[in-house]
Image (cartoon, rainbow, N blue to C red; front, side, top):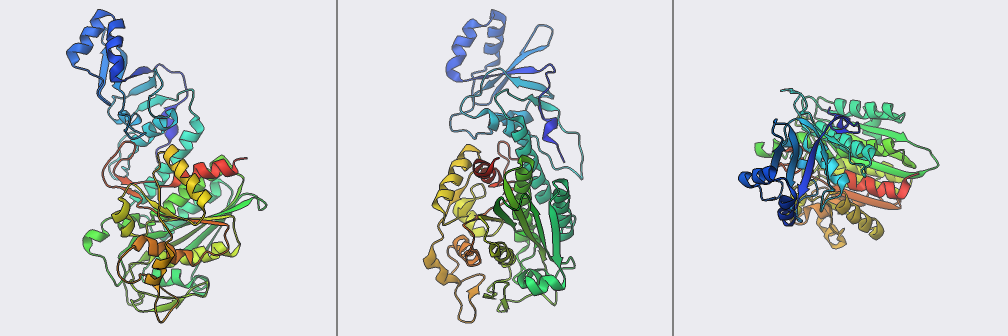
Length: 461
């Protein structure tokens, strides 16, 4: 995995200056330049258009500085950092404070832009490094970038190389590094205490399990993170079409984001008693696969009728949420690549979140904007609970009518959380379909940095 410390440097080695120039500043700058440089700028046709680059060279060919057209006011906050992929290899520093974007986000965007997933076609990391601006907390940027790299690596890894065993191994490495206590429940104990996790994963040759680790002082505020760890989803007997299966290696994106968030929390040593729960399964097809119309009892005692075997994420999550809720934590957060309906409503880049806690919702919205980690609240609209009713069980996992699929999934999960002081559910995509500044195509961390900023505000020592 890439280490962001290789990209964002704090040494004082020679660096190429980057001068960010807004269009209104260009005319005065040209007046103040020696004539030969002004002529060079004019002949190159540089007009400070957003994110355009111009190399200002000395007579001997040595680069004096590079001019960068300032990003548009409406540009993504990672836009200026995204020039890292267009610059030649070298060590750079900004001469002036970047306009419109916080220097922290410029530095983070620079790191995130240079991410590559290339284990099958390995290539050296492009040595386009940045001198950390003095106003930037380098440790915080490195923590966020490295957690994002971890998330991206896990989501991008093909499912034949990252199943429940490998997800458990990744959690174990993280827990060991930070001296967290980890246990794994599988086999008969899983079937007895978490029946729906066993049911969803039973048809796979890779056994299902519940990964459970804790970290921090027992006396601290209790935070429990729950992540959907469906390492591949065929849809089960309600099988997906081939096009629908192409990205299903990313169906463990909720678990990856939760592990990334846990990493940030432990690196920062927040004053929390952290618990992480990940139901790790593969939703496959075999003679023992669960069927539409089957009814199962859950850990909480609620009965669930299977309306669709492709709505399996909420089945494994509800068991982990029930366990989390039993110890009445201060906050439960779950993340899951749960519904296509969320993508229809808000697209791939804007995950919805659901909570009844108005203060928590407002704080999340604030931090999402500040961290360039977009989120949007959707309602836990109780009248829609009628859509997941069924005459033969307490709940149906798919519901009727096909409307409001993300909301009804959130309402389903909410039935399993009664005792936690606060609860929030994120319906993430975990994938960037088209490259954007700081976000190469592929697996993506979503909601992780916004949630961490909220937790840091509330629970920093």
